[in-house]
Length: 299
Image (cartoon, rainbow, N blue to C red):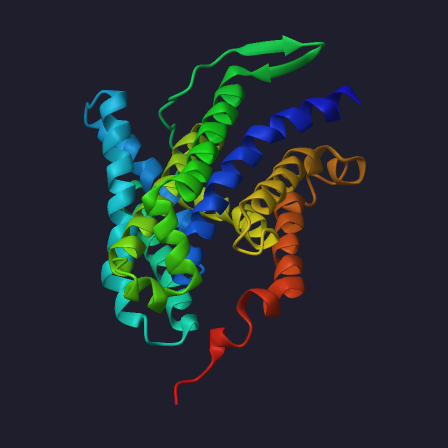
């Protein structure tokens, strides 16, 4: 039982990172009605940007700032030059474009850094703490704290800032927001930049845990999509709850008796279970989330 309790607490920081990724997806969807399937690619490229700039000799804090600026630029570039020209097309066209960006970023990272696993820079301290026989790494506690601060910042942004109110207005009715004088294009670009920065933060924090490898980092966005869909791509509290469930699943599933005994034969059981949850959430909420607008044809 102690093992499962420890795994539960170890899963909470991972859940926090999934929540950060999912919140970026929700922010972008609320502002543009586009499901950004390139979120994992943005996280991966930002982690590699930190790795490369640090390899070039930049101090870690400077490299971290440079990587986050790069993440913001990637999100802005996607919205401004790849997705905005498709605004009058069916939404599915834009979603497919994000899949293309994901494939391009993954191929580019593999070409530059190969598919070998690299050691990512450690931006949080190592060490362990013990509470009532439960051992938790300091890095996991710092990750959980950083995730909490970021999520609190997102809530504050949406509720108490002019930009957040503008984002909500654009999400509710883009045309009405434009008539009210809100610069909807700039708001959309800023939202994509912020969503990309959240992805980048999650990628930077995750990469020391799982190692830098293009496909692995990219696929870790799948649980974030599950959490975002659980929240209906609109509710941050439900998104956080979904991320918590998925994060605990990610930590606990490999140690379950029926799974652990088959770990050698079926090493992807955890990933299959999480992917199945994405499919289940989509099946249950597809009509609510997308209705018939996703595939409607132009007249």
